[in-house]
Amino acid sequence: MRIDLTEAANKLKNGEVVALPTETVYGLAASINHPAAVENIYQLKGRPSNNPLIIHTSTTSEIYPYLSKDYPDFNILAQNFWPGPMTLVLPIDPELISEKIRANLHTAAFRIPKQPLILSLLSQTGPLVMPSANLSGKPSSTRPEHIEDDFGAGFPLVDGGSCECGLESTILFNVDNTWVIIRQGALAAEDFEKVLGYIPQILANATEKPLCPGQLHKHYSPKAQLILTEESAKLQDCVIVGFDDTNYHPSCIIYPLGSKTNPKQIAENLYSVLRQLDEENVHLAYVDYEFPKNGSFATIAERLQRASLNDNR
Ligand code: TXA
Ligand code: MG
Figure 1 (cartoon, rainbow, N blue to C red):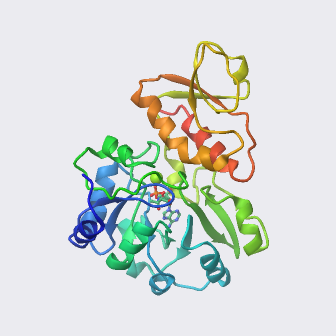
Figure 2 (tube, rainbow, N blue to C red):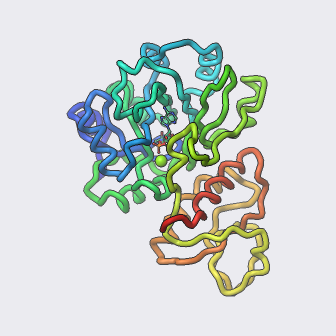
């Protein structure tokens, strides 16, 4: 059910959960002041309770009061990348943020999104927790229809059209005074160099104890089995997730991600294409994995890797 910003603000203030557009992906929002609504988010998504939520605000002044210490680079990162697709995990005073939101950690994740609808809403509602608006484990939602598919046509949602980035925010964490990337996202590691003076190391791959708890869980996965290949030109009689400007054998059915030279377009289409495979009951698809893996392509490659993991499905 499409609702306008006034109705969304009223519902959030009344402790309801609504789906909202951001420039990265759609989020399922609840006010941080309504514990039952926060709990409801975990239930709706089927999200493990050890996976904390990102707190979204419209200003940095709403973040400062929660922090237990200063980081010299916090201001410079905030000034350069907020509002925008960057999330910072920061040490907080645990008394001030409920255990549920931070999954018992003594840190919390913060982001100021730049999509104009959500930014204006946040200035009316105050801080909102907002995980991606998808059933846990599935690809995130980048279009209103994806939310209707996951949560039903009656679910309250603000329609912001197709999300500009199509990939989640990049999450940074500070280890021994150096920022590292604990979830790759819409901003590439290289994008931070001009501001930090170094390219933050990517520590986003699942280990037994990842710095970003969400990395432990199955993620971004369609039901279809995906096989990544750099030899898709040789394939025949199969489904290929591929590119507009590549020639494949005419017997193959192509699900196009966009042009191989346009990572922005590929990112915007990625989750839609993964979801489309399931809608059309595709059981097995090859993914043309022959593209650069650096810069803006790095997150796309990582998401495809994870989507193709064949764990306990
Ligand atoms: O682009 C985005 O970040 C979207 C939009 C809606 O803002 N949100 C999003 O939220 O992707 P979610 O919940 O799907 O992913 C948040 C990730 C999870 O992997 C979680 O483990 C991690 O952030 N996270 C949250 N708090 C954390 C913390 N204190 N320390 C480490 N990781 C944290
Ligand atoms: Mg998510």
